[in-house]
Length: 186
Image (cartoon, rainbow, N blue to C red; front, side, top):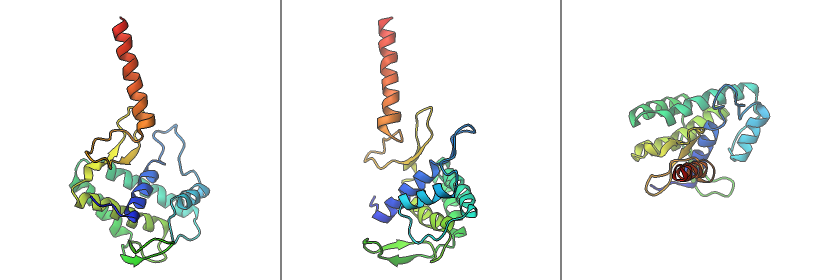
């Protein structure tokens, strides 16, 4: 599956957005205030964003939950329904652009769109490409018992199980190794 630069950026953005949600009631929100949302927008180089407000923060948090539901969808039809609702509500308006030194690519949000509509349109379409390509199963949640972060499995054989093999994967492998050694020691 060919993934263009703008699609990859949108995928990274939607994954990071979903992962800002607190995993439980005791965990902090990764988007606690407007300044954090501004930082998120800046770090993901989301273009054409105006002044952000508390209203935007609240709307993006609601959108985050809707994107999380796409990752949790049990099958492609359910994911497609959720994605269709997201991009329709955003008033998707495809247009070609070549800004900031990037070659021609497509933006799906209307000029002057809110940050929520911007993210819903561009990130929703990036997720839609996976459903269309028959690759929805690549939209995953980490299999580590103490982590449920979202990620997109871009491995060749679709075998990635953890959001980060250096942390979650390694931690589980070390725990399994220690359990085997303990059992062998008797």
